[in-house]
Image (cartoon, rainbow, N blue to C red; front, side):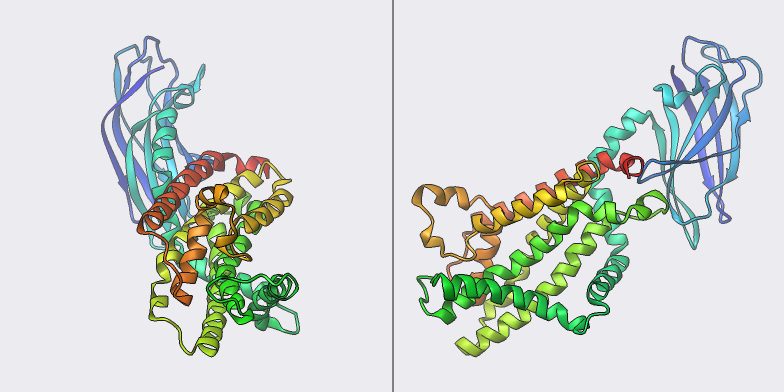
Length: 401
């Protein structure tokens, strides 16, 4: 079934009403009897059907090659959100033609407290839209995150406050939790197992090298560990609200980043006390914070999308994070790696991040420029791939949850 649209004019009034004027051409080999032109409203992000717009009858029989001038208009949803409208003919025999493979006039609109605004419009089939949406998924998801950055920061602060609300320590646990965890690992590896680094064989030297490696690891593992259940725990956002669910993982990453900054402050105080000053190179830490945040969000997006369908993923990821911890030279010196496995370990992006933190805070050997550029390339590709997967699976989240 084929349809062609000519001279399409799309207007949106300040009162949130849509008006479309166009010529509809029966470009198929079949007669349209009792056909009408209508429009369906869907949520642009989740693709969930929301409502129908008022149809306009195409008077008389429409033979192959014939056309009709049509004008349809009606009110847009009043709830703030991003919507996709499919303007398409429907017949008693086939129903909506765009669901049978025909093209529709697709209109994307944004509705907020200030009214409605036209985002874009064009003629595409559902299959073409799927391919088009997938190729633009990373850009759209990053745009959604950026446009909701204020909400993400507010939810991150709320997440930290809610995590310790009602406890005696309250917000103090934001400092105590990473500190106690670091001290536990430090006691096991530094005191009990007596692990040492070649550059500084003292216990204090091991403490600094160990804590410099733990700081980025804790932020990564905290957000990734919560990712498999992020959508399951917030299913009401997915099923009943028009909400940018992709920011949920960003919220967890930001909450972990806030905790990491607290840990960084404690680590800098320790470096100052033990070595007399913090190197000026520490100002370059954002060079490694950016790919760390990108990798965290990318892995979290992937795990949260898969976690909707694989409920055991939450248990599996705990084991995988433990394995990754020991595959990253955090609690042992890099020099202790077997020569044959050294090249394999260096392919771990967290290896470069941990090494970068140590280099900037403790004036150790810097990762090579090639490895840093490769880290950024891997981070960007990971975000792109995870956004494609997330956008592909998102339309079915509400059905499964």
